[in-house]
Length: 109
Image (cartoon, rainbow, N blue to C red; front, side, top):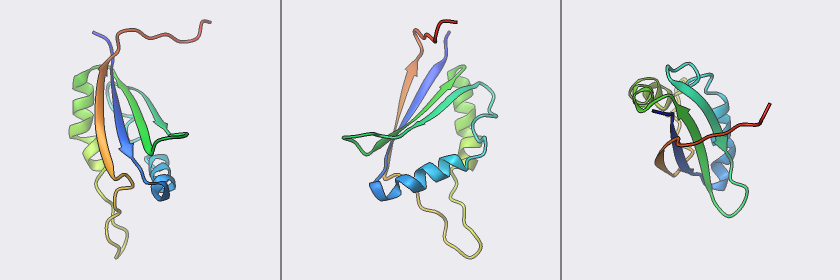
């Protein structure tokens, strides 16, 4: 069986885009060190939508589920700084799309 792709569709108001991108930039390998992880991309909308796409590819569904149950929960807990309230999510909505990789190609050597 081939890899699986998970695309998290995040609805992000314009005033929260920079916050979202900074938070992803500060994630410090939160997903890259997970067993079965293969690829990550954060895709910024160019025009006509307020939806970011978070693309991840995994060896199998079990690897994704293990990350979801463990490291992802820890990484997405709102962090509170000294004496401050926890951070609010930058996205106002989220939908998860799941795909099996049937075919893929890369550049020819």
